[in-house]
Amino acid sequence: MRKLHHVAAACAISAIMFSGATLAQATAAAAPKKEETGKDIAFNRTKGNCLACHGMPTVPDATSTGLYGPPLIAMSARYPDKAKLRSQIWDATVANPSSSMIPFGKHGVLTEAEIDKVTDFVYGL
Image (tube, rainbow, N blue to C red; front, side):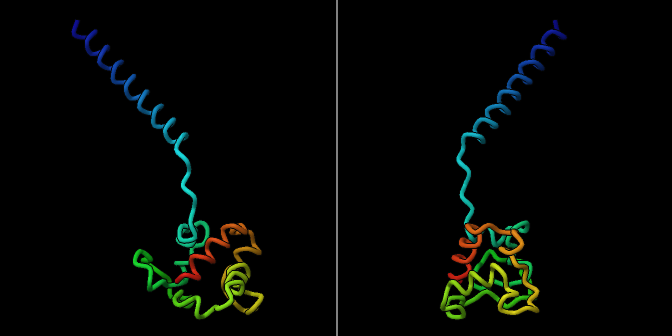
């Protein structure tokens, strides 16, 4: 009888765990995916990764920033024409052939929509 009790308990626990995992998968599939913001892309190490080279002194959660590129601050004053900032992100080598900045658009690292989002985010710094 004792073995039967242990087997029944193990089956019940397995059923609960299985149903919980199935419910979690169903919930994750049903939950709408959060739209990625310009900040998300800029901070994402597999996409924009702006923090690898640039500091963002006005963004409190921009930690472990790089010192290689210029700090991203007062960007609307530095780039009064937002289109020039966007073209800089798209391909910095057009304005400066010796630039070490990755041509995010030209090399397909970011899509047009992602570049627009990053431009909006950086322009607001």
